[in-house]
Length: 185
Length: 235
Ligand code: SF4
Ligand code: SF4
Ligand code: FES
Image 1: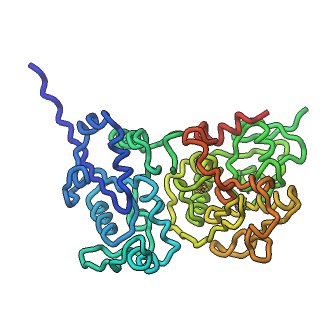
Image 2: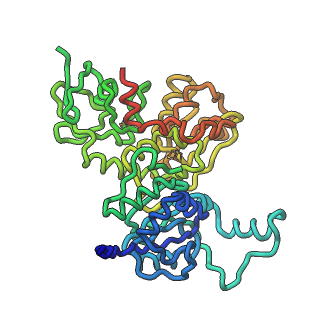
Image 3: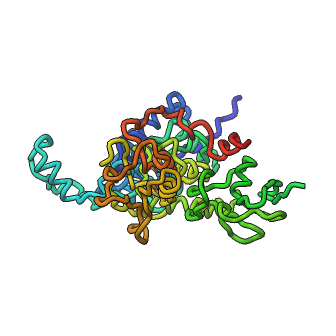
């Protein structure tokens, strides 16, 4: 008789894109057929891949993107509350990235130019629907708001770098990226 | 008999008058550094090259090698401090590598890779540092200046022009100034052929119309880490 398969508890993983472009999520999908192996080892909680709206207790939270509005901050705090390990994935989560290039401009000036004065962009007026999250004065990286356990730089980090980090974490090792995998661009 | 000192347990030969940095470099041993350049006198400002000499901290680019010295370089203690210094450089400027033309060829970035800097750690300053795009051939993006003074020295000592000067105080006040009435580079006799035009270790002084011409994978530090390149270049 065959011995019963040992029940390996899958790691529960949540992912989100805050002020990011989903490029880091695309890079995660770039691990190609390794995603089948990954699905043997993890199950996804809240993530653009599952459409679950709120994060339950998780082993791992992958955060793409920085903080550019109030909702980003709420989502980040929800992840920190429910995930044992938080990983900042990509340049925007780590230093604000491209969205933070607005930081030397006045927020009102930007909104006025985009929604009122620049004729090529439309003149509908600055949106003020109460459903819309309020923009922050400046864009911030996530480590300024919550404790971050690991950082995975890159714009985006390559599929190989993401795979290395995931397999290190799944094996209980401290993630370590060698030459070629650690890059900021 | 040749004079030697010990660097991380290895004998390094030197000639009198050489700094620890110069002797190490000649032996192909990498000591992390930013403001030091082999062609110029040491400036001693970035402190990244700090080593421990007989148990005391010292800047290896300014300290003369002495026979029998015991120098610690790539210890966990020193590299931890260096990583912290790099993190301060990154938060004090605006370093968005994905949109920087110097990326892949930048000494600050390559040094941060070498020291496995995974995040800026500190809160960002996001200082406001306007660019100077006035010159027809050269762009100045001060967002990335690390105040190494190499451009000041190169312009004064090699080009005989004195285009750049360091002035002001504090993280947000200290900066490179352009020596012209208007403060703009276009109103100096700066030229693309100047030594100062190619000296900047980071992405401040950039030739126009040449951005991103080397593909990712082929740039200087894509090939091998900065420490390996020092080893390869040793005579
Ligand atoms: S100067 Fe170097 S570290 Fe700064 S943004 Fe450019 S490549 Fe990155
Ligand atoms: S512009 Fe470049 S060379 Fe000049 S001080 Fe700044 S970093 Fe150094
Ligand atoms: S390299 Fe020695 S102080 Fe900068």
